[in-house]
Structure formats: structure tokens, C-alpha cells
Amino acid sequence: MSNITQVVNAEKHMTTLKKGVRASGLNEILSSTGPFTLFAPSDVAFEKMDKTVLEDLLKPENKTKLADLLNYHVVPGKINYKDLKDRERLKTVNGEELLVHVKDGEVSIEGAVIQNRDVKTSNGVIHSLDTVMMKN
Image (tube, rainbow, N blue to C red; front, side, top):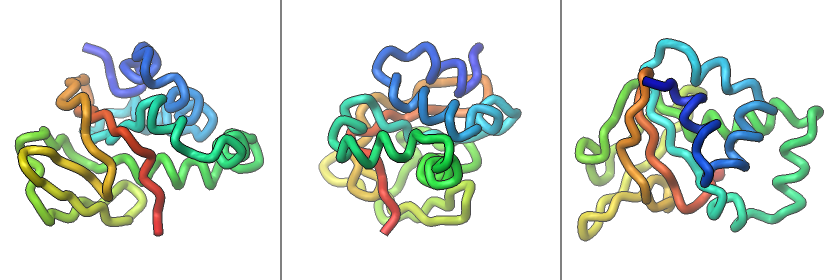
């Protein structure tokens, strides 16, 4: 079974995330033992972002900012979709908190709706998001 980095690299709807994971050095963490839960913004999610902001984040001099943004999408441990509870707070790998909302059977994290869910990997699970989560 592939690890999170390998799945992101192979997924055709995560090409922007793949670039970001490589540019930020997050691929090393997401290839390690884990387990991790990755709330993975799809290409559609990145298209909603201001193009200049995204291009700026991918520059080598902004590696720390990019890593910080992407780490905001990674939670230690393996959390399956059915285990996400309304108003639950998840702590990210960089110590931030994400708030879960469950309404009418739909789960969102910080307002980003989970689309493709429970993609199993050797070191965790991936849930695809329709929006890039930004820290306040």
C-alpha cells in the first residue's frame, strides 16, 4: 500500500497539492510512519485561491509559509470520516486547531467540505477538500 505522499503524487486531482508538498518539504513527514490524517485540498480548491497568492507561496523563499499552510491540513493519527463529530476540535501537526462541523450528513472542516473521503494509505488516511483552509 502507498503512503500519503505517494497517493498525492499519483492523484490526478491533486497536482497543485503535489507541487506544494514537494516545495515545502512536507513530503518527508507524509512519507514517515505516521499515522496522519491529511485534509487534502483538491486542484479545484486551489483554483479558488488568488492566483498571485498561490504563485507567491510556491516560491523557494516562502517555503516556511507554504509549509505552515500545508501543515494546517495535517492531523496526527488516523481519523476516518465516520469518526468526525460535530464541534470536535482537531489539533494539527503545527499545534493549530481545526473545528469540525457536521450538518445533514455533510462534514466540513473550518468551512471546507470533505468530498472524497477515507482514501486509505499505509500511514494514514486522506480526505479531499473543496477549499484550502486558511488560518485566521
